[in-house]
Amino acid sequence: MKFGEHPFIVKLRFSFQTEKKIYLIMDYIEGGDLFNQIRKYGKFSEDVARFYSIEVILALEYLHESLNIVYRFLIIILFMIIIF
Image 1 (cartoon, helix red, strand yellow):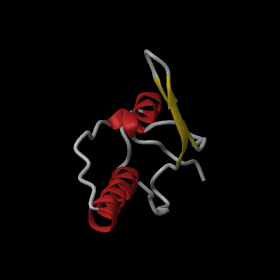
Image 2 (cartoon, one colour; image 1 turned 60 degrees about the horizontal axis):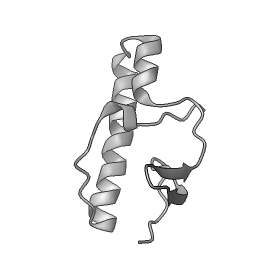
Image 3 (cartoon, one colour; image 1 turned 180 degrees about the vertical axis):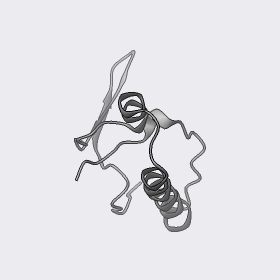
Image 4 (cartoon, one colour; image 1 turned 180 degrees about the horizontal axis):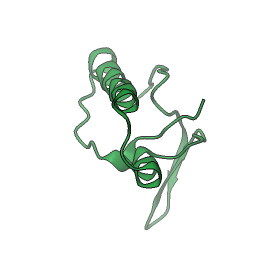
């Protein structure tokens, strides 16, 4: 399956598996995931929360409308944050 490019979706470069594990090689995202950012900084301001919410919505909209993918496994630790 070939995916297009979207600024809010991390690229999967390569994958492989062993008998017990699956490895996913993705682009490095400086800043880490959303869960650790919340643990580190505590509660986000309304503007910051709105910014990250819109990024997630746009990424999910792209997956759904452009690629016909329904993403059902939304947990906060899966979201990566790009530091500008």
